[in-house]
Length: 489
Image (cartoon, rainbow, N blue to C red; front, side):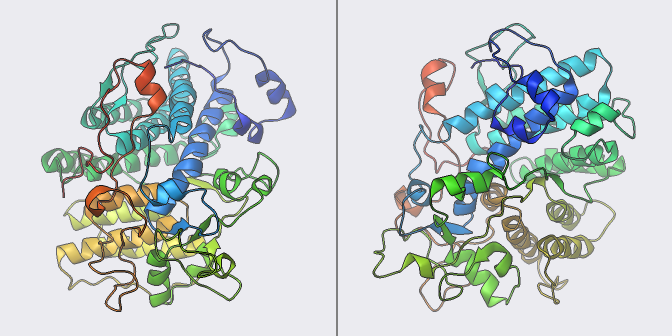
């Protein structure tokens, strides 16, 4: 794995003034360490992470979360829709994270520690942990502690660590950063380069705590003792969580400066914006509940709103005219969300449901639903009230299903799909989507799916180029339907 201390790509053009662009626009040997202020390196790293989770992973997650399905008039994402994922897929995103963002976070942490700049250290640690968790949840085993050892040493063959080991280390790293003397406000230079919170360190602390909350809840079924002890410790210490969005909102309607999902799927240069069509799964849920968020997620087809059954891209265009089907509503300037305000409240609601914290699960659930509707700019009109009479599992289902619905509006499909693997919600339908007994919002196996036994995927295969170049990488691929370590429910 190549070590690049400062990853400069198209995303950098979103961030800086001309003078900074001149500074960064150099031909630098990636094998020779370079120096730069942390306030310039950090936003490039954060934007690189955003370009992956808000770009290629947003497409993968949007389809696997059944917000979207592949248009029958084109074939851009057919392999994703069919669960026909190969080791050659997503290798660029893997490289962007390891050779780009994670190397830059490591650089910032090293330089910040030497300067006692603990604000920058916390920012980089939080984003590093966020990035590693995404990778661990998608691949289970990943290169971790041996990646980029030291400032000048390159370890091109790092050992892969189990996801559980990665999780435990991320908690240690976050706790270390949180224990440092953090100022209330970052320096002017660092604040100016902070594309997430503009130097508001209270929100960075809340981001760190919310990320820890997510890490503990993710393993609540696999290691309930570890999860509960960790959560109890957080609440006993008075941890505060995100009450605003952790996001990047720096995009504009200009070439190479648009939202990364828009650039990947609907850029004018692609000559089509029809690939992602409304999936019957999520569409039916919104429609059955007369949920006004439908118009914030989909653009109507020529005859109004209409959806496609998941995985039916092989249907002829004479049988289903593509232009009649609603398509994904993706805007050029939409933010990329790491953890939304709504997601934070739903995480807290689940913890409260499990008997942790001081607030009521109902109150936090209501806050999460309200935040989602507010974020999409529509009125809730009393939809989805919390039922105190429901069983524990019924209440958990309500929380997770509403989290799934909220994540559609923030293009966080990959998070929604990972949560479905953890909790089992939304449930899988026992009947076809066209059956009158179908329950709106339940997942259906894609009609063109290729996995054995109609199993849903639970992981990605390790990139082919990584396996070929690194003898310490797993040399035998796991089936994409094999659950990752925390997926035991």
